[in-house]
Image (tube, rainbow, N blue to C red; front, side, top):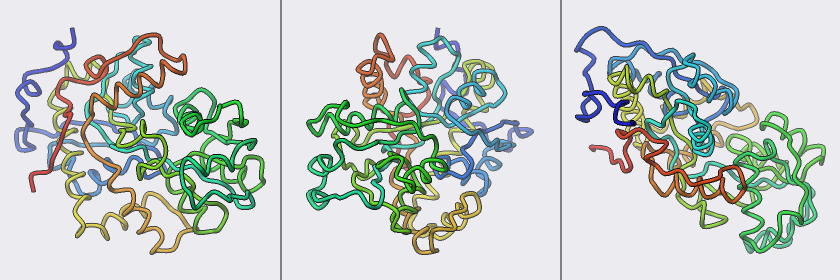
Length: 336
């Protein structure tokens, strides 16, 4: 069945050049005010979409569930969403597949608010988790991937999830006030919040998953990628090919050290962080660059499926072949 979704252009692994005809139109969902959708933002600003024959409209989308709904309904051509959400969407019968990767590491860090004693901080993980027992752990929402990751940080360190209290505090814009008030003591979130908390002295990063700290199961684990509907894969294969090539071009450009200053300036345009100095913002972006990559590994999909099964969100395993388009790369290296 899945081979029906792959047209001749994709089956041959070819990309239709922009000169082949009029540019194809596509809409691309991204998370406003966040760094996680950087590949698409760079592709737009550096005109990689245009060079590959795409006329792209960037569409701000507030959350993962909204991304899923948008691509499944056809209101957005491509969206940026996590692998756990993809596996659950396919398991529920939604007509979506991944077409290319976005991150090759989990881009989250466990932040502890100012005022919480951390006598074991210097010992690192897992020793520092002892300092957080009996505390209120803030998460985006209950029963989602970041909640499961936070639980795994606890259990991998030798403790029970029941030894802390998990509280849903929403996105970073509401999590930060919750940390400031002391309503929660920790929060597992992505940039720019960890850098903001460190720069302002409001908190301390105790486990940085993006740097392969914490449970080994999260080391070098992809977190999210770009999806399309199965109808797009079937009916518009050249659009999928042009989109994936554009993101590969974007990755190869922003990964070059000589382009760092341009990348920083571009991200400052999309992500305003007044709490960070110029140098701190640059350090944050530079630290994030190694977390990106276009590949989607079997290990990544298998690991997320197991995590969902362990947390009783998924009844049976789903493999890479079940949820990823045949043309998506499992490994990738820039030409130069």
